[in-house]
Image 1 (cartoon, rainbow, N blue to C red):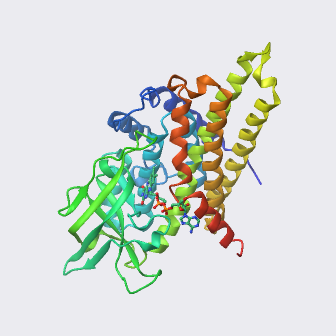
Image 2: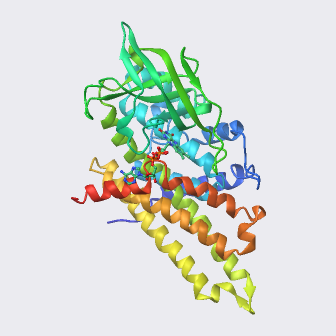
Length: 380
Ligand SMILES: Cc1cc2nc3c(=O)[nH]c(=O)nc-3n(C[C@H](O)[C@H](O)[C@H](O)COP(=O)(O)OP(=O)(O)OC[C@H]3O[C@@H](n4cnc5c(N)ncnc54)[C@H](O)[C@@H]3O)c2cc1C
């Protein structure tokens, strides 16, 4: 086993950290960034971070999953704005979906524009009555003479309010239970019968725009079907494996940043005549962050390796996602505690880091759902 990153991977990592620290973090004020930062989006596209796993022939970076996870980890470390990081990851995941399952026509219509950031993408599964139970979606796609007609609604969709292109999961065979029941469609902004809600107000991740999507007799051509009709659940499982690796690699980077900040503060801050790091109650919190960081990185790397080598990755993706999200949330809680009053003040910017970290244990399948998956894959 070789745990070392190649020189090329290390160089890319360093350049991403510098770019993210220098150009992607200044807009995060203590009052949170409310607008979607289109200028930053452009510079992220120019830097080449929107199509990490898209072939170079379509303008992407052509990376494998291990290398892409390493880049996103660096982005999570360098960029203080985890909402922006989430938006970037969503774009990458949509591009991977189109590249993996799209027709030649869909790839040539969309991939370059996604890599250049000319189109913003979202993927829409969740509905008012279908959250953890993704198979319960009710959005229907009825076949017509020249395509499909979509009816239904989606909620909480990341990038939804600003998206130009949405990957929509809909039911095409209601008589079937799971296999063959759903399909995937590419729906463009402005399609008749397709509406996008204003961004939801939420606890954190303010740069990331989430919101509802509505389909009322929305007619889409046959060519908007992604992959085979009825292949929705297979595509969903595969895309969740990618999402749980790539999106949550950014949590490892963020965890490292929180750890370094907490350790630095604990070394500097003196009470009772000594640095607070000399109190075991403080140093053990830092040790816990370190243990979780190492575990998270190892499991995410393993999951990414499984994907790259065509091996089953669901178990490792779920463990990695669970570890990354729970570890990041508890590290942020501990960082607030270590910083004392400063940790609670908006000025210290740790309360925002904490708010931003909380949703990670809910989206992409909650922690409870990850434990259910891990138990099932362990034979119970
Ligand atoms: C910031 C953010 C971004 C999101 N982005 C997207 C997106 O881009 N696209 C998209 O489609 N969706 C997105 N979502 C939606 C997200 O996937 C759902 O919120 C999530 O799957 C949980 O569904 P729910 O909110 O309906 O909660 P519910 O499913 O109602 O769950 C409520 C509680 O019950 C628990 N629970 C449910 N079922 C079980 C079970 N079987 N065993 C044990 N516990 C269970 C859950 O863990 C949770 O604690 C996003 C959500 C957020 C907050």
